[in-house]
Length: 98
Image (tube, rainbow, N blue to C red):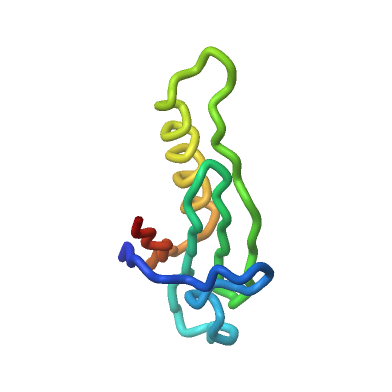
């Protein structure tokens, strides 16, 4: 799986550049996952059929939990997303510079 950092548009309601191309042909191309990382992570997945699925996932720690729980929740969510996404070959994420 390739992981790429990208500067994705910050405009609301606009799909990330990684999933803008048209439908994928049935030629065995891989699925693409785009992430906007944060406590509430935005995601978009272009599956093998060319359909785009998107949503958000929240990883806020609950009361009496350490910050490491955020990472563990994200890791579990990412594993499940990659399993359900099929042949995900590329993951794009926003490279934030401060």
